[in-house]
Amino acid sequence: MTNEKMEQRLAAALKKTAPDDVNGVLSRCEERKGTVIPMTTKKTANRKWTSLIAACLAVMLLGGGGVFYQRANAVASVVSLDVNPSIELKVNRSEKVLVCTPLNEDANAILADMSNGADLKGAKLDVAVNAIVGSLVRNGYLDSISSAIMISVEDKDTARAEKLQRELTSTVDGVLQTSEAKAAVLTQTLTQDAGREQQARENNISTGKAALVNHVLALNSALKFDELAKLSVEELKDLAEAGAPAMPIGKAAAAYAAEQYAGTTALDSVTAEVDSELDESPAHYEVELHTAWGEFEYLVDAYTGKVISGQKDLLTTASTPSTPNVTTKPSDQKPDPSGTAQDIGYAKAKSIALNHAGVSENEAYDMDIELDDEDGILVYEVEFKSGNMEYDYEINAATGAILKHESELDD
View (tube, rainbow, N blue to C red):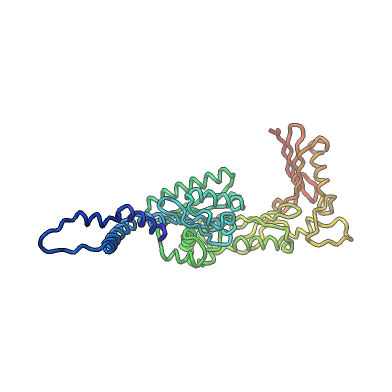
C-alpha cells in the first residue's frame, strides 16, 4: 500500500470515529465540590483524540494490511525454465508471477514480445509458463526429438515444490502436444543453496541449470563449471547419461566444423541445425546444413571435432557451373538443373522416376524434387502423385541409379 493511500484511509477513519463535539461533552459536565480539574480547550482535546486514534488505526492498518501486502509480494517459489535460453520466474504463495527474468541473450529473444518479461508480472504461473514455452516452440528450440526442456522448482516447502512441479509438467506437456513439438521434459525440485545461487549468478544461468551442471561435475571433477554452463540442457543431459568422459566441443563448434568440411563458411545463406548425440557411441553431433542445393547431414565427433561423415566441398560437387567460361561467386552458384558430369540434374532425376513408375509427365501432380545427402552420397528425392497413387524415389545424383522407391495408395 502506498503512503498516499494510507493517509487517505486514516483521514476517512478519523472523520467517522472522532467527531468534532468537544462543546457537547463540556455542556454535559456538572460542577462538583472539591478539587476542580480544569478541562482542556477544544484545540488541545482534538489534538489528543486525533493522535490517539491515528496511532491505533496505524497499528491496525500496518498490522493487518501490511501483513497482506508483505505476503502478496514475498517470494515463495523460484521456477526456472532451461533449454539453452534460461528464464527465471519468482512467484508468491498464490502462484502469481512477481518477476520474470531472462538470464542470457537467447532468453531475451524468447521474451521480446512480452516486454522482456515485464508483461508476465501478475499473471498466474501456468499462464506465464504456457506463453514462454509457446515462444520457445515458435523459435525452434523444441523441434527435434533429441531436444529437452528442464523445469526446476526451488522452494522451502517440499510439498508445495512437488505440487508445482507436477502442475508445470502438465502445462508444458500440453503445449508440446498441441504444437507437435518433440522435446523431452526434465523436472527437478531444489532446496535453497547459497553456493549454487552464487554459481548461477556468476555464469548467467538459473539455479536449476547450475544444479544440473553440478551433477555432471560430480561424474567428472576435471571438467570446468563455466564451460559446462555454456552447454544446452540437451547436451548436459546426454553428457550425464554417458558418464561425462570429457568436455564436448559444443554445438557452435560442431556447426563450424561441418561448414568447413562442406566449404560453405563464406556463404551467409547457409544455416545449420545441430542436435547432440553425446550418449551414443561414438559420441557425436548431427549437423544439418540448409543450402541452396538442398539439405546435407554431417556427423561430427563430439570431442575431437573431426567430421565422421558428410559431403565434402559442396561448392564443387553440388553446384559446378554447366558453362565453364562463366565465372560465378560462391553466393551466386545454384544447382544446375541441366546436369553436369557430377550431377544428373533435376530434369533427368524426374524423368528416371516417371519412367520407372510408368507415369507420363502430364499424369503426374504434386511433384517435389530435392537434392539431399544420404550418408555422404548426393541423392535426388523425387515425390509425386498420379491417380490414387503416391510415389517416392531416391536417385543417385551422380549416376542416376534408383537407390530406393516406394508407392502407396494416396489417402
